[in-house]
Amino acid sequence: MLHMIQKILHKDDGIQPNWLKYALSGDGLLFLDDTVYAAQTRHPMNVWLQQANQAGQTIYALSLDIQARGLELSTLMPEIRVLSDEQWVDLVVQYACVQTW
Image 1: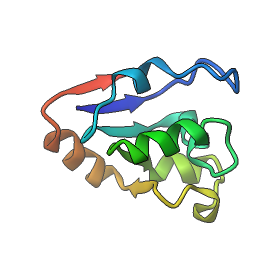
Image 2: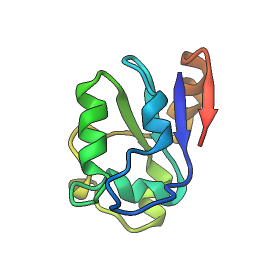
Image 3: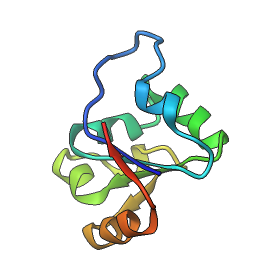
Image 4: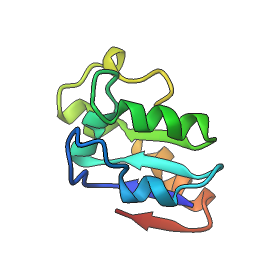
C-alpha cells in the first residue's frame, strides 16, 4: 500500500501517527505539501521515519514540494527517495492500494 501523507496533525508529542500504525513492511510513505518538512534530518518526526525505514517501508517526498518550500536536498534524511511528478504517477500505479492521510 502507498500511504500519501498530506497532513501531520501533531508536532513533537511522542504519539505515533495513525498512518504509521497501519503501514506494513513493503509499504510506501509519500510526503506531499507541507509534510515534506518531516523528511528533514532534524525534524521531530525523524524518529518515526527511521523506525518506518527499519521496518521495511520506503519513504518518498515529492521534489516540487521540497523545492517550493526552499528546502535543500542535503537537509533531508538519506533514506528519503525524492520523486518527480512522473515518478509519482509511476509509484501510484506500482502499488495495489493507495491511502491518503
